[in-house]
Amino acid sequence: MEALDNFWSVYSNLVLSLGINGLLALSIWLTLACGMLALANAAFMGIGAYTASILTLNYGAPFPVAIAAGMAAPAVVAFIIGKPTLRLSGVYLAMATLAFGEVVRIAILTPSRSRAARWA
Image (cartoon, rainbow, N blue to C red; front, side):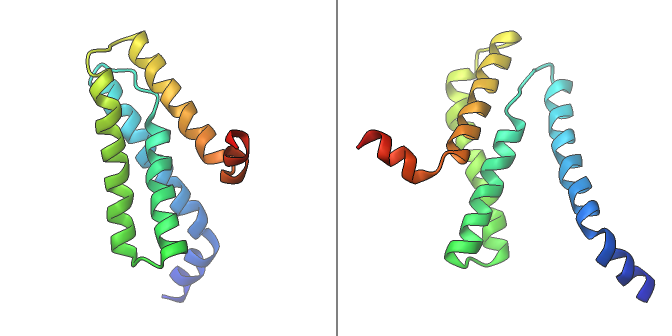
């Protein structure tokens, strides 16, 4: 059992990173298998991770609550984004989802203070 503990202490980051990236690859494969080219999978993953981390670090939410909120937040955003893009297909769907991914990336990377300072 000590060998397993030693393995986990050395390679835990690698195993968790491979698992997370495997789930992302599975989500991309699923949309491609349905015949859609959606490029916002990483944005939805980022929304869920950001929601769960903010709830855990800033509000002290328990782990199951943070995970549930991390699943619910991208689902709500996907419903909101899905309503206007429901009839798109092909390159138009790819452009719309790519634009959404960029909006999410910029919104997360831009500090809140600088956004508020720009509008003041």
